[in-house]
Each structure stands twice: as structure tokens, then as C-alpha cells.
Image 1 (cartoon, rainbow, N blue to C red):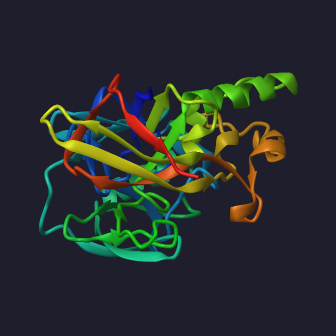
Image 2: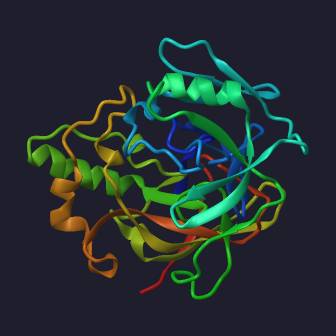
Amino acid sequence: MPTVSQLLLYPIKSCAGISVDAAVLHESGLAAQGVHDREWMVVTETGQFLTQREHPRMALIRPRPDGDTLRVSAPGMDDLVLPLAWRDDAPSSRVRVWDDEVEAADCGAAAGAWFTRALGLEGITPCRLARFRRDVVRPTSVKWTNGVPSQTRFADGYPLLLIGQPSLDDVNLRMRAAGRAALPMDRFRPNIVIDGLEAFEEDYVGALRTIAPAGEVVEFKPVKPCARCPIPSIDQATGIPGPDPLVIMQSFRANARLEGAVCMGMNCIVTEGAGGELRVGQALDGEIAF
């Protein structure tokens, strides 16, 4: 029987994640300790989002909830402290995530200057920090959901990314056989890690469900394979890119449904019980859908 082995949130898109023992499963993704997954995003002054693809040092920016604030640290920098309380009068800005443009809250000049310095972009690309607005809905594509609507915040495309621990174990067997070092799970930046399946069996799961502590049924459904970008080549502890694991994974994880893209993990949507809680160690019921 599959069980939840890790729950992870990334409060600031493309920055370091936080591991939690329990999280609330919202339609737009996980939330815990007063923060939502991908609730904040670093952007240029024109609103274009920034990621580790171009700025691997983002891996070294570490947000952590601290009471009623989000404390953000980076090497050689004083911490940036962001209030968690929502400001209805926060100035708005238009920001872009891939093909989507949404209204966001701008976190101010001081926060923007902090991220500009942390990324070494002074005199190159001034940054701003955007926060997802509570009154905004960013719908996901229904192309892969059989028409079922969903929503997300600043994630690339869907509210959840699911990976099975046996899948990473299989990848690492092949990495070692090729003379390469094993990869930690954080290279693939999942939200939910599960154990108890065969390697890559999450690719074929129709839905996963459980009973939340309050007694309600909670269900999430894998809908689209996750095509991987170069981020798995970046050491999340150092921010330094290394050999690209996708070169090796190409031989066994290329997906014809996504034009040969190397895939690892499944994007998911919440189909029942939004607002229910998931916990590490929780058992899940699953069904295989071929």
C-alpha cells in the first residue's frame, strides 16, 4: 500500500523548499505553517519570472516560516523578513509565468533590492518580489485533465508534483551504473513523495485517496507527466550546476506523449476533499488506470 513519505513546499518559486510533517491540501496546492506552495515569486521589473534555470543561486535562498513572518536567508546576506499577514492595500503588479499573466501583490522596493543582491544582479537585472493575490484564480490547462478544472499559484503548470521514492531509487541505480553519483530527491522538487509503489508506477495511477484526520475523503489525481528541465543538474545545497542527469535518463524516461521529453514524476490536481490534511506516514489507496 502506498504511503506518504515526504511533504514539501516551496514558498518562493525556484528557491529552497521546506519539509513538513503535515500540510493542508488546497485546490491550488499544499499549505503549511501559514504559507502556501509557490506563494511568492521573484520577477524582473517588467514582471517576468526568474528561476534556477538561469539563476542557479536561487537554490541557496532559503525561506522558513517564523511565527507571523517568512524569514528568508541567503549566503552573506542579512535575513529578509516578510510579514505573513495579507495587506489588502498592497500595490498590484502584472507578472508572467510562462504563458500566463496574472495580477500579483508587489512586496516593495526593499524586498526587490534584497533579491537583486542575493542573486548578484546589481546593475544587470533589478528584481521585484511578487506575492500571489488571494482574490486571483490561475486556472490550469484542462488538456490533460479530461476537462476537470483546477488551479495553481506560481507553480509551472499544476498544483502538485508527485514522485515515488522507488522511482528515484531506480534512477540512482542507473546513475551509479554509469559512474555517476546518486541524486537526492530535492533535485526533482516534488511536493508529495510516496513509498510502497513499484518504480515509476505513479505514471499509471488513476487517483490516490485517503481519509484526512477530520474524517473527510481527500483525493488527488496524477494527470500529466512532468517534463524535466535542467534544474535536476543543480546541486540544491551549493547552487552549482553539475553533469546533467537527463543525459542518462533520456535512454529510459523519454516520453513520446511529450515529444520525447525526459519525464520524472506526475503533475496532479485535487479532485476531492480540498481543505483536508495530508500527513507523513499516511496510507493511501490507489487505483491503476491504463
